[in-house]
Length: 102
Image (tube, rainbow, N blue to C red; front, top):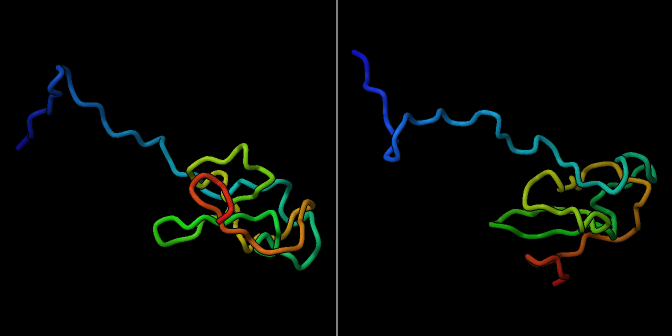
């Protein structure tokens, strides 16, 4: 038994759902290539790392790329990534929704 084709309330048929839209597959918000910095250090041990608490989980960003920050994973960094050449000793600083330190 065939099902009748659905129609939009505005006329015409319904478009199939988009399949080309994807979430960013990995974090790409690093100031320099990961692994180019001091051996043994990570993004989680950098003073340029910022952490924002969103709905029960932490989102990490690099302060050196703040002008490029978006609200998706494309500008995130992973705290376990090897440090980049712009690594600065310190610990992540917690920020609010507007990027200001708490």
